[in-house]
Length: 175
Image (cartoon, rainbow, N blue to C red):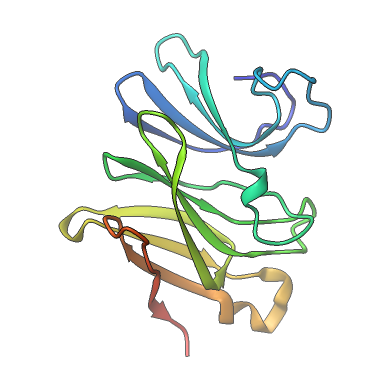
């Protein structure tokens, strides 16, 4: 992987032969000016699982849902066509938490082709592919800085992976 001290990889998914997607939550405080060297962080890098070399990168910083937060990609799932990446949208000190968002990356190109906003949820950290219904379940832990109100933004959200514009629905909610 591109060299910086705190890449903070969160997950890896073998999305297709020769394409290992790695979610990097860390941000490089001193990236080079070369935009092709994949040393920025807050991204998904594609690795060749045999050589370990980076063969692609999807920058996610612009997809964070709150000002002064990083996208903070988390634990991913693949449905065979897309790699679904939950974004936690966290500030560096974890005190600011944006609303949940999940992006779908084309397994062949790594490009973001779908975006699902989870308007009631925060700190979304894990996606699971539900093969029987071709749905994606996303676990959102809520915003811990909200103290007693943390549970209000803590949900499990499920959406249809095939929908042209997937609409998220809360599957489990605390009352």
